[in-house]
Amino acid sequence: MTAAPYRTDLPGPSGDKYLGNLHAFSSDPLGFLTDCSRRYGDVVRLGENNVLLTDPADVEKMLVDRDSLFSKASADTRRGSRRQGFPHSTMNSDGDRWKAKRHRLQPAFGRSLSTKAAEIVDAQGEKLLRTWLPGQARTLQDDIAVVTLRLVTQLMFGDEFSDRDTAEVARLVAPIMDLSTSPVLLPEWVPTPRKLRIRRSMARIDRTLHDLAASPAAHDPERAPVLHALVHGTPAPSPEELRDELATLIMAGFETTNDAVVWTSFLLARHPRIAERVRAEADAAFATTPAGLPRMEALPYTHAVVRESLRLYSPVWLTSRDAREDLDFGGYLIPAGTTVTVSQWVAHRDPRFWEEAEAFRPERWLGGGPSSVPRGSYFPFGLGPRVCVGAAVATTETVHLVADIWRRFRLELTTPDRVHPRPALALQPVGVEVIPRPW
Image (cartoon, rainbow, N blue to C red; front, side, top):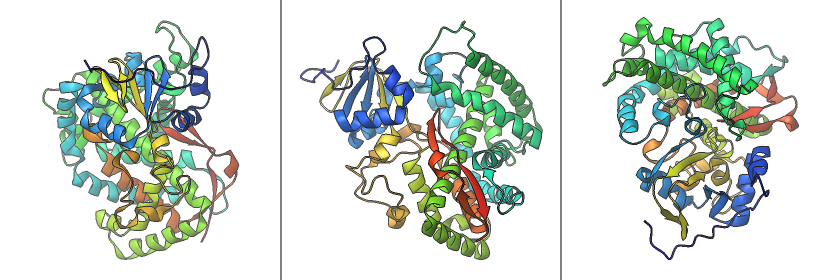
């Protein structure tokens, strides 16, 4: 028990008499969290059992120093249903159970997987870009989704999905990613249209993943290191655990890379001088450097562009944990059971720590990055023990695909004013329609 004299009168918006801040959050989550951080300070009461932390030191303390004092909290685990989430996955596990799962997966995500990713992404990018015609409008989110889904399945599971399977899985992922768009949790037995769509999608995903786990690639650690690590792990995973692991790996690898590439391309389309520099660097790198990680090392400016894009539009925009015991942050008492939240969207745009916080300035990441920015101010892949296991692979994929697209085409936004972020389980770009133009 944390001793006094910590304060308990946390500042924060009072909200509606009956619904509290539910309406304000659900109607504009990004604006609501930003306003709370600017108006109420570093520790904000969002609701009866919800707190937002905005001080980078507290962010680091929560995710790194005090990680063991929190349990995983997410939309999936709070719902606690196999039909509406993936509770048996590493992503949604805690304690010793999480450590065992992470230990089983970690070796498969080494440097060799990043090398393989760099090689595969070039081929998949080439396949996509051959279908683009100069002057023909494209919905960028849909096009990149096909590439990233093929990439993640081939990279992790040894086999590239067919066009039909790719379209099917992409269609099924959408309602699952929709899980967090409504914070109102009705009883499980209430057959809402959303729940019915999710249940149908889960059933189809189960069938697809069952076939994947039974494929010959599961027995080949060179061809499919991630799948092999799961299927042949110790102890052997249950069928439910295996399905949940495969589902979360596909969705995390597919959705976050997809969003990162689209957001980066959106920013480059709005900043032609930066785009020209990316094109020049990519031209030189593709002409003189073989595919793979050596090419990644030849793209430092493009890497800086991606890092800056992840600052402004991190696909992971919110991270929450449940306090296992009474804790103190910023001089305030946080009772056990409180859901404590940190927001990449808020932290990455905090003007206290970022010069020209709203501006797209890739050069801030050159030469090792901004040394004056606290560690807890930038965490697109998380921090501490639970940092994303696939962070290096995702970065490699994003940098290579952005370089390949922009060395071939200059993308023109058809309706730039209609582009906006949709904060679901990931920060999805909406309305990014582009016209490829030759340089």
